[in-house]
Amino acid sequence: MASGRGWILQQHIRLQKPGPAAQTQTPSLPSQTPTLKVQHRGVKISNAASDKKSTSVRKAIRPTPLPKKTCLSQATYIESAPCEILLKIFSYLDPISLMSVGSVNKRFYELSKDNVLWYKIYISRWKVNHRWKYDSVNSLEKRLSDTAISDPDPAYWKKSYIRELIRTREKKLAQILKSVKSSSGMPAYMERAVKVSGLVWNLTFLDTNGVETVIGQTDTYFRDSSLTVTWKSYIWPEFHTLTKIQLHGVTPVLTDKCLKPIKNGLQRLSLIAEYDLKDKQVPGRYIGQDIHVKIIHLHPGLIVGLWKKGSEIAFVMGTLHYHQLLEKSFLGSAGSPYTFPVHVPILDDIDPEYGLHGYQLHIDMYSECRTYLCKTFRGMFCRKEYIKNGYLRMTAIGFMQNRMHTAVAGTVGFFWETLTISGSIKNCFLMDVTVSDESQTPYWCFSAPVKLHEIESSETLFDYMGQSFELNYTDDMGKVHAELMWMKEAEEFYVINLVVYLNTEKVNSYFGTNYTDSV
Image (cartoon, rainbow, N blue to C red; front, side):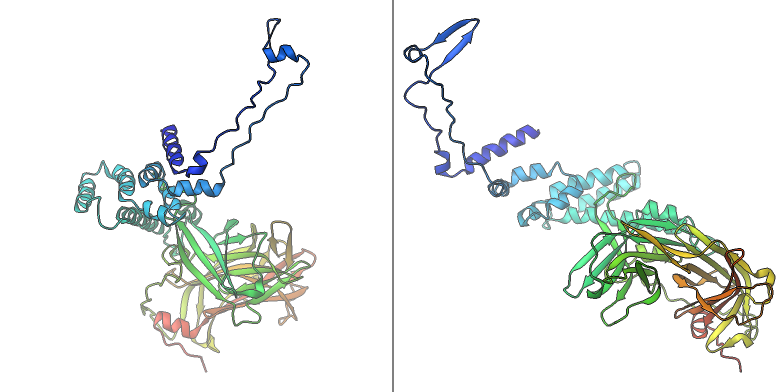
């Protein structure tokens, strides 16, 4: 079949040649016959000319080469090929290639929407999947009979094919969202869900000139309650020229018959977060630095590493908490994030004067694959007298609770890596916090970088003799405060105080309560 199509195209090209080119003739041979000598089994055969001048020098005659066809002329021939030939060629393309060829020019775009081509693709894809389901076959045949192939819309069957792909994708994603639900309220089997769905995360940078740069993810690390995504590249846009950064969840729309993602196929983008850098002289929160880079935190969940010399981007890292991550990555659009249903408060507090009770805190301190502290604290509470300065205070580790003091494994540091070098920033690390209410439903969740700062010890603890450090994190939902003691002999930190503060206004809005500061 391939040779037949090539022969037809050659015949068409010959017909398209202009008159002067068709009349071009090869150079004629000289009138005098050249010397010709053939040696055959020891017998010399020569012509008359060679007999007269046997010592004449033979000269090779090289005909003048024909002009070569340029790529431009070949492209012109292909574009001017009859529609029947192009449609025949397009009929051997798969759906992805057929969509790609429509981007060549306007004529190819119109031909690539041909209903006959997409009708065959539609039937071969969806009828095979439903042939053993009688009701589904009948419903499919009814849809096919309702619309003729020669529908006025030239892209009818292409749109129908894409709609079926999107419907299948939504059904698959609904199954994935259902499979990760657990009794604890936190998604389970996140690593498997991400791999099955083909989910990846991309960054889109927009500069002052309106130029967009898209960087795909490099690595992904899965933790107990969050995942870390890294983006590495040799070519980054200049950070001081950026006006906006967008974080998108990208899922494939095209899948094979086994529901596995097809590489380089159609993709669906869902906006997770957008960072506005236009009106900020110092965007983000400074975390720390070493001899090579300094890192800043863009809330929520984006860490940008900048070279100390020149302030150009060295790497970008994202810390994404599992809570509602799949919904944000699947269900949004390219320009707007997914809007969650409005929470309806359920007031079930038996004794409002008693305050909050039965809360749970899960904290994870780490950097890449290194775990410094991972622990869950249950039975946390807040009495009315603990509500001050607009926050409800719940203590996980108290100064005087020596049995609750917890060691931090190893020397903490924030480890970073580019495509060329790597390093670490001392006394910095990533921290995941999950605060759940009495029904084990996550209320406040975040994943962010933090830094330890040296302080003067505020309490006299004779069991610990060393330098004191503290870490603080604050957002609109609350804040976390911890104090650590460095034990020089053991070369490790001990957490001697850990307190969570919940914003009173947010708690009242979420739970329908009316807590106020105690007098």
